[in-house]
Structure formats: structure tokens, C-alpha cells
Image 1 (cartoon, rainbow, N blue to C red):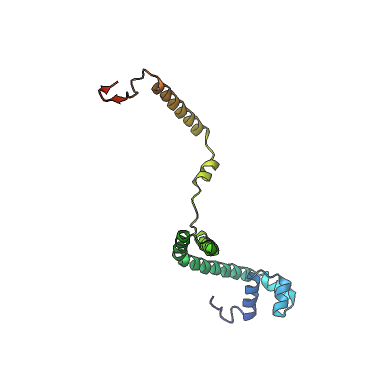
Image 2: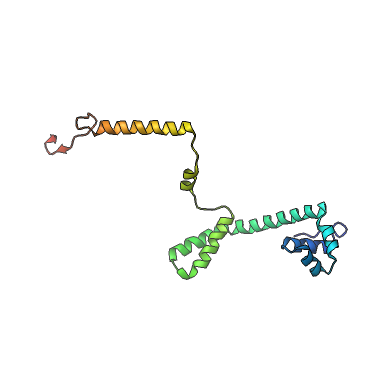
Length: 160
């Protein structure tokens, strides 16, 4: 992460930003930096600090995603290798590789869940009912013994 120019962003403010991004609250930041909490609060509540915090977070997320993305092929190969060996002792490696793939968006397809959750319009439901009625009628006609659509079994002498 590049450093800001001194006159634009002091070292203390940078350290304050890093501690803030690590999840420390204002009293904890004040204690770590040996500063008064009101000074910390005054800096953290400025628009400039909030803007830099968002930029910093976005930069960190971009770098993390790049690490995951460049490791994706290696993770996929590891999963294939471990799935072929079936070694239960390497389950942690398998789970870690799977998590890398999840982080870059390579997740199993959930077609069934998406279909179940789909809400159908009344027109779609009516059309499906009509199709079902047509299939049932066709099945009924084909099921009759005297239907001209039923194929007759062949015997050695020809057809029955």
C-alpha cells in the first residue's frame, strides 16, 4: 500500500487509519497511539478520513481478490488431486482450496434451489396446466389397445 505524501497525510493519521480498519474503536486507537481520544474522534469523523478509509478498504479488497484470483488454478488442481487420492488426512487442504475457489466466485451450481424459489405468473401456471392436460389426453389415447399408434410386437413370422 503506497504511502501518502507527508504534507497530505501524516504518519499518525496513516497509523490511525490502519488501526481503524483493523476494527479498533476510538479509545483503543487513542491508547495505541498515545493520543487524546477527542483528537482521534476529531480526525476520524472528518469527511477526508472517511474517504481515505473507503479508498484504503477498496485497495485492500482489490489486493486480496487478486491473490485469490491468481491462486484459483492452483486451488482447482489441488482439489482434483486430493479428490483422486481420497486421503482423509488432507481434508483441511481440500477445504482451503475449495474456499479459494468460492472467494473468486467458483461455486457449485444450485439449479434446483433456483427453480424451487421461482415464482410463476398466473399465465405460466395456466400454460403448464394446459400442457399437462394435453400430455394426459395423449397418454390416454396411446394407452388404448386399439390405438393405431401402438406398435405391435414382431415375431419370427412377421408381425402379430
